[in-house]
Every structure is written in structure tokens, then in C-alpha cells.
Picture: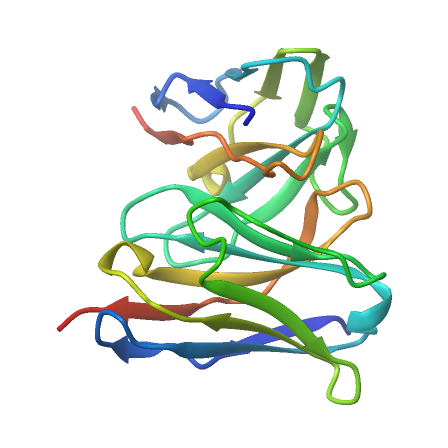
Amino acid sequence: EVQLVESGGGLIQPGGSLRLSCAASGFTVSSNYMSWVRQAPGKGLEWVSVIYSGGSTYYADSVKGRFTISRDNSKNTLYLQMNSLRAEDTAVYYCARTSRDGYNYYWGQGTLVTVSS
Amino acid sequence: DIQMTQSPSTLSASVGDRVTITCRASQSISSWLAWYQQKPGKAPKLLIYKASSLESGVPSRFSGSGSGTEFTLTISSLQPDDFATYYCQQYNSYSPFTFGPGTKVDIK
């Protein structure tokens, strides 16, 4: 059974760093495209980043230079390293298994990141 | 960047109604469009990909159409489980994979 379980969210002060994890089961992360999508409280969905099976990575302009997507093949886990966090980064962060075309066909349950002093 | 708009932002409907949601892209995205359903507190669920392909397991009352810049999601006969927010997403290119602002379907 395919499963994605995010973790690592929490309350962090502005300017701080946090690393989100997305543990996958039922498929191999490194053979797939994987994405992070976020949703601020009461708002819509915002695409954050994608990593291709070949290792290429892409980011939304709003997080470029601050966030880094990566994976650990031995742990079959996707990561999002978030640095220089801002209040506007407050959101539920979802990881998703992404088709090679670009649509997200399986989602985790999400992890909440709150950036506040 | 490609911008996505949706209309209406909110739609009030009754069980059994035919419901249509429109999504427009700021430039042509061919058929590279997906539709998602999201219920409160839950992750989005893929309904439609490539504008009109029904994801496995999704009821056939959901259908998608369109190409280029204008797309529609139709629910042929609204069911109680369908009250939710619906988002379109373009994936014409990674730059970036933008979502529409969403359409909330609620009970009339």
C-alpha cells in the first residue's frame, strides 16, 4: 500500500530553520517525481518544490534560495529544508507523489509549520 | 509565470444538481491541467488529469473538458460527498506548477 507520512512541523521563530520529512512506503522515492505543496490557514494550495527522479530540482519564487528539496534513497524519504523562515511560510506542508507530467496523484496528510515569535 | 483563475469562487447547489466549474490559464497550457477535490482538514485528492482523464477510482459523475486556456470540471449529479473545495492546477511547465484559487461548493 502506498503511504506518505510527513513529520517535522512545529512552531518556529522568524529567521529560524526547520526540516520536514516525508517517509514513503509502497514505492521508491528515488524512482519518482516528488513534490511539496503548502496551504496557508484558510487559503488555497501553493506549489513549493519538485524533485525529479534524475535529481533536478525546481522551486517557487517565494521560497527559492531559502528552501531545499532532497531525498535519502536509503531511507526512502523526501525532505524539505527550510531556512530563513518568515511568517508567510506558515502553512500545512504536503508531500506528494508526482507524475512525470506534473500532476500530484498521491498526497500525504500534511504537517503544520507555524512561524511566529 | 502562468496564472490560473477559477469561477465561481463559491457555488451553492443542491443534491442532484449539475455543477460546472471553470478554470482559465493566462496562456495556453495545451491539456496539461489537473483537478483536485479537498475537504476540510484533509489532503487534496486527484480527480482529473490531462484535462479530461478520470483518475482511477473517481466516480464517473466527474468529468473534465477543455484545452488551451479554458477548462471545465462538471459534476453531473451532485452527491452529498461532493461538497468540498475544488482546485485546478496547470503543469504545462515547472515554472511553476500553479494552482487556481479554488471553488467552494456548498449546500444551497
